[in-house]
Length: 390
Ligand code: APR
Ligand code: PHB
Image (cartoon, rainbow, N blue to C red; front, side, top):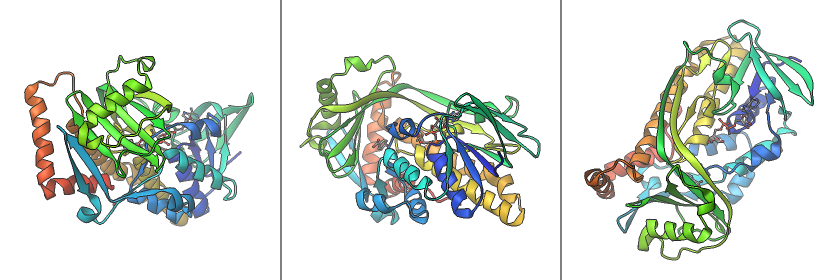
């Protein structure tokens, strides 16, 4: 089998890229190790930057997003019993849309067949060959049968544990990493959200986030130690903790209910450079991870593949490789800024084990400063709604 672009992984990065290739008339095949149900079922964040919404519009994948997505023109910070709002629309002219990653995935998968987006599910034992030559290929097994997909380029959209980044020699790849000494315990519950917008709370006991999926479905998180076990977190304990950490004002009207999803995710910042090796291009979590504070993960995957698609289109239209040559530097410039924001926002809102009383006062002072400063709020707002692609 032969194609132009072999895309590894059918997460947000891989599927957006596949749709962009289909729209540009460039042959591509997606190879995914898991089933559609598995990929679609993973619960992730749910805040779409303007650029992500715009891409769904351009691809004509925005019908449900327009009907069910919740436009948010502001976001809220709570600390020490206080809560204040950052009016993103007033400060930047932009907003975000709350729409679960699971919904985005469903829209991308539903439209794949009708638009001729080719996806091979349960492609196992995948191996990349010839990446530094002119004719790379991807070997894999499907239902016990060996296949080889010859291609011009390989797009590794295969997440943090994929084969793409692992195929780049150690002496080429430089990795930057910060592992945080805590995780997020998250739940989904069929209850109305405590507030019509998100609330990020810094409490002496740790961070909490009140988010949502719809007017009747809420998503809450609390920061927990890495040694915490999910079995020790009854729904009641979880709700008590959320209520305490949000504080009396922000938690007023909190509606409790049984959780139907509960999981702990560790927090990490990670960047691998460069995002290209020969004819292999990395995009999304394959190249970088952000802590979820600020919900940049999926949005970064989208901005990567928007840039990669542009570069591939230029190559196939004019045999002009300048976009491909510039991809890594262009993508990384935006990635590092989102890494900085996610890292900073995590530092502002979480309790660190080595924090002393002074460090805690610094957090509270910074929050009080932000509360009173339009300039500081603008910095948060413009990062939160998403920096331009450039
Ligand atoms: N062969 C085939 N597929 C693979 C392989 C492999 N060897 N390794 C990984 N994959 C698939 C995974 O099964 C997964 O479906 O690649 C996909 C990667 O998807 P994500 O991990 O979602 O990564 P990405 O598309 O970059 O999305 C980034 O979305 O899922 C969130 O936390 C993520 O917010 C981040 C954003
Ligand atoms: C979520 O709703 O899952 C969510 C929202 C905002 C974040 C992270 C996660 O910063």
